[in-house]
Length: 192
Image (cartoon, rainbow, N blue to C red):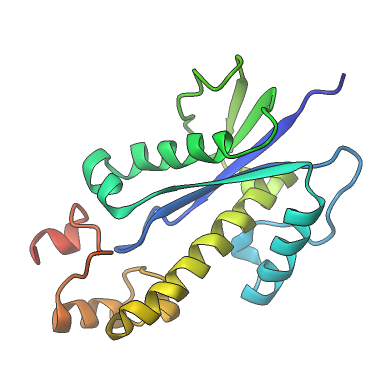
């Protein structure tokens, strides 16, 4: 029996607002998905089309979230690890091995069986399963922030997705933080 290998990546560690989102993807052996690459190297339209292909053609995938309150309570690293665990738990199959983009691994105990894992710096550019996960995480988070733009139009979340752009910081100065803003992040600690 062939080992099931899941790639895991996240989107949204750096923004001042919104959740951190992780995805886990197990690709079908011998069935590469054309165009899969690090999400940062793709246009929004390319990511959107690839997200549909990955959801359709991968053996399985899962998406996990940690919201603003969890980020503030745990810190961004631990909230990212929580989102990664949730992504694994959301999959219909349990992998045998996990490849995680970055230099640290989330706690993988208690997921139904003993998993082996490896952290890979720059894995989103070198491992197709991690690249696929980066696309799903980014498109899920961007879609959420686009929706939040309709609820909080004064912050223009559809434009900057919660990142600390000069425009976003100007809007924060003007309106103060909303419920999506991470109160534990330095630029917001003074505005609470």
